[in-house]
Length: 442
Image (cartoon, rainbow, N blue to C red; front, side, top):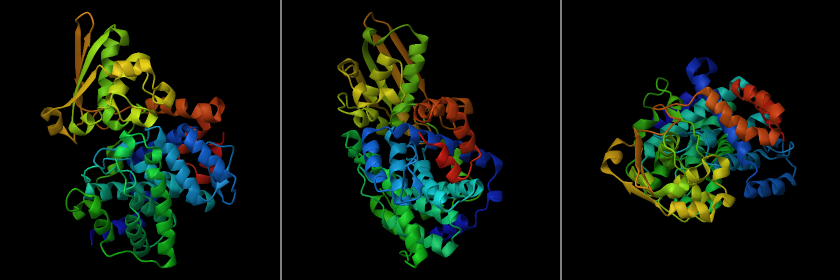
């Protein structure tokens, strides 16, 4: 079966099997993910959960961005993955329609810290889990209407990564992955668009369940035959494409097709925000000058048309708010998408933004997810621009220096300017999990 072949690949992947360019990309993804976890650690709900769990100091896994608070590996994986999701700045993959790295790294750090794994072991396991997660996603994408991708296929990637870190054999790895598929969540996209912040914990629960699945498999629990496809078929729009599990395995490295985010909002808003930034740079106008904004894009993005978000999460999934915030503040980072940023001034501008799906942009997705924006000013001027794909992916990559700037902005307020360089260097090596975790202390 295809899932057995995937498990065999995961269990036998060695550090020497990972090409240099893939290892470099993986280390960037690790560094970026550590950065967004630290950046999200200050979220009020994440902070409250951290305090509650840190009071039960009964584990060896670090809650990142704290003064070294420890808890169980399960809880650390959950809360660190949740922190890494809350800002909507985590690395993603357009063909998976989701975010593999945040479904893999938190559990690896939590498990690897207590078991004293090396940096090479961390990197190998991360690549194995990432490749497994994306191929499982590609097997079931597109998902059924209304299903949010976080928490669906990610747990299988978590299980694959942790199984590789623990050097489990192919059979045990396969059972862990099949068991993890059984724990796929009934996630709803409406949680994001309606501002229900349970959505921020979908990846956290996948990390936790993936860890549990590995321990079950080690104990002798077994998974359902063909269980990955059979369990996940209920969330797929069509029949699972089992061939996707092994397509190009070992030759095409999916991590090379991932993207990095520069705007703290849903990826579907990014092409639009790229255009708005370009127009603002080229033409002298501000938000008060804008009479109307017309956005043309692909259907999934056009669905994010709410002009009156009520909290930060809804704002991140609203193209009108994202456009209005960019025009009003000139920023699209962490501070632009908070509860406090949802102001009357920004909402008034959002009311002037119209979003439309077009056949032109629909036909290009998912290879290209672009947008066209036309801005009309009060004095009758019209400015328009379009992009074929958002920044950060293979069509328009961002530089290592850009990623380092993003990292600094997220991490320095947490651990201090003097400690940022050491953490970046350690994440890029990458260092052993226990070293990485120690360097994230606030």
